[in-house]
Image (cartoon, rainbow, N blue to C red; front, side, top):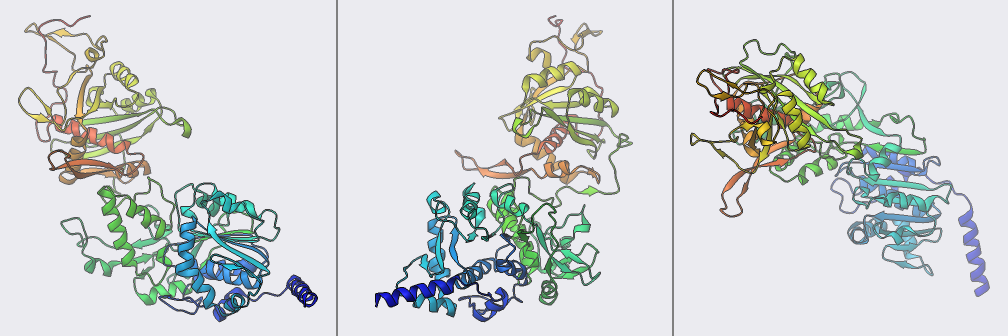
Length: 623
């Protein structure tokens, strides 16, 4: 019997070594794959998820070695991995590795999903029932020609195993840094390996982001009913790039007093605007028609080898997800973000827009209104009372190759507090700052420079050029001699504070008082929350004009800070607070400093910008 058994084993091994013509994966999946608990169809049907067609066809084309599929939630992405698993078990040879972020997650998926899928596929179920002498345990099965193991990628030892022919890497956005490359290393000894990465998007610059951009980078596109051309389906609309298309709606008349929306009114205005201008409406029929016409575009990464394929699509392309649902999720996420909880917005970006997240990824949602008919010019407002400016100093980050620099805003203000942005931007050197101020005919004592960063440099720069220096303080308000409480402290000469000579000599007036020159730079503290509250008030109560040609930096920085409330730790009362949404918000800070200067000058009538300093001293200043 042992000889017979040995001959049988040898025969089976010989037959397994003979190349077999494997069937088309999509046709095979239609006949054999069943999806227990599926909300749409228990039988796999490629017409329900047409965006899986091309990635699925690549698992057995003999050319493709890496497939990276970055997808939104609820698009059937995990089904791609499950079909590849079943197909390779039956028609593959070698070690098949199914990797998840950690062993706990792997076991959860085995119990909740994968074991059921294996047993629902009749050819695979038959293999499992006839294993005989082969070992079969949870998450590890020896199918003879294929050894299958399901595991977590968190433990290094799990990736230090034998050479791997087939590898499915799931939820890569949650993997520890470096583990994807470590997993890749298990395939290098196999010439005909195949790797399948499936995941939502993650953090910008992470290992998944790199994998996507190392591949062919092919976004999903659909045929436009208006122009018959193919266009990518992008969720986010950008007013500056209508040529990209995107999801749109009309908010006018739909906003409520609490800042939310009446979605019953909003729903009828929702459309996907194609780059040609054609509006597709949010109906099941139109969404379905777009899906069925879809395909992945030609590779957009010309440097990628054809064996490294990468695909991506956004939730707006998934026809069974209503667009109003995406808009509502976006609004809820932004609302939470403005109130100090960034997690819903991160999830929305990565799971719906299928974008890689960064702190800078907060869209412009209408809190600043661009006047597209106005351009930034040195002329500014013809009836201005003041031309104010503000500077924010940054030392830069050596790791990013940044040198010390300034952020500068210049704004004109009239007697009613209405204003117009004249200049904004990053300025690299002190000399360039002064050159820009002179070109715009700015009076030096009509501006401020924040000294919170690179303090000594700012003080000396201000004293040299006659610019006022300011610094954020810990008080919400500051007491003044007249009994008032203001968002800025009483001013004092900058030179006296830093123990230097004044910029201009003091002079005696007719009464014998020694008075400083009107242009002598001053120093004062400001309330960090107060200046931003003043800016918010001016933006909502006056004509705070922003020309349409402002930089992307300006638009992004203006969305970098929000005012919220928090409970006082001792009294329990609600007090205003700031939340910082982005890494850079310097130009918004400059606008807040200008708002403070508008309050210092008085919002209405009678502004005399060249009024002499009203704080004389009887004694001459020290030399």
